[in-house]
Length: 232
Image 1 (tube, rainbow, N blue to C red):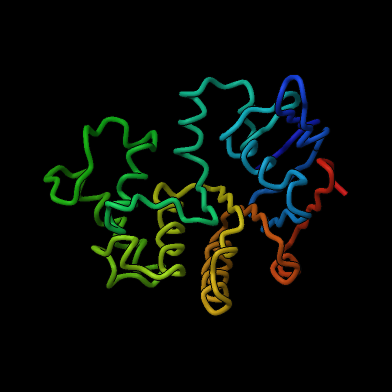
Image 2 (image 1 turned 90 degrees about the vertical axis):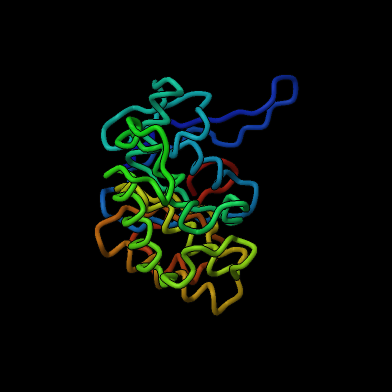
C-alpha cells in the first residue's frame, strides 16, 4: 500500500536541516504500522510525505502503486481525496460547522464528489442526500449519533477526535494516516479512541500511526523507528 524509496527531505537553503536522510520502507495493505522515535527526528515529516502534504527533496513515495512524488498539486489532491484519510493531534475541525457539516465538507474534496456544486444538509439532490446519510452513519459508528448538530466548542477532546476520525473515513479511503491522534487526550479518552481505531483497522484499512507511546506501538503489526532522519 505504501512504499518509499530513498526518501530525503531538506529544509532551508543557507542553513539546511536534513529532516529525512534516505528512508526506504514498504507497508503492506491492511497493516497497522506505528512510526516511533524522539521528537524532531522526522516522524511527522515522513507522514506528511507519505500523505502528499509535502514533497520530498529526493526519492519517491508510492501509494497503491502510484508515484505521488511526480504528481501535480491537483493530481495529489485527487489521490488524497480518494485514497487517504488524515487524523491529526489537534483535530483540525472547522469551528463554525457542526460535526455533520465537517464530514460533508470533507466529501467535497473527493474525486467522486467533484460534479456536485455544493453539499449541504438540506440539498434536495440525490448526491446531497446520500452524503448526509453517510455522514450520519459515520457519526453513529463512532458513537456520536446524538452529536450530529454539535459544533466543536460543544464537544470534549475525545468527541472531537471521534469526529475527526469519522471525517477521515468520509470517502472510504484504504489508507489512514494518523499523527499523534491521542496525544491531546486524557487517558480514558485515549483508550476509547484507540479501541475505535483498532476496530476500524480490522475492517481492512491500512493505518500508519505516529506516536510516542510504546504501549500503542506494542499493539501494532509493524513498528518503524526513526532517529536523526533515518530508520533505526
